[in-house]
Image (cartoon, rainbow, N blue to C red):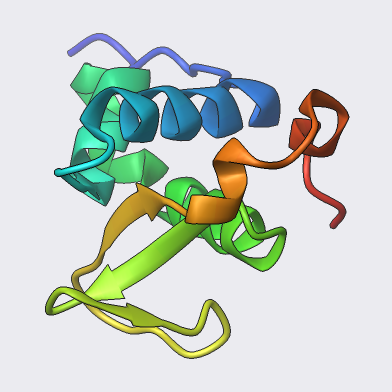
Length: 104
């Protein structure tokens, strides 16, 4: 059996994919974390869900996205289980420089 290949996806690619998918869904829809991971690397999307979760949390802390559970916004510091993501209203009002990689 062949050994699986390692894949590398940059943090910037994860952030950009989240923003792009949310922008495409905006204003009426939200995006599932699984959709984000599958867009990044469909063959191994399960391995990316932790990275997606961390990136979503960082983007939410920076005010770029909202995390939703059961259709209601939740704190990025205290969310569990299944969640969805959408762009925050402030995303459209921030300057382009504010959309750089969030501070870690």
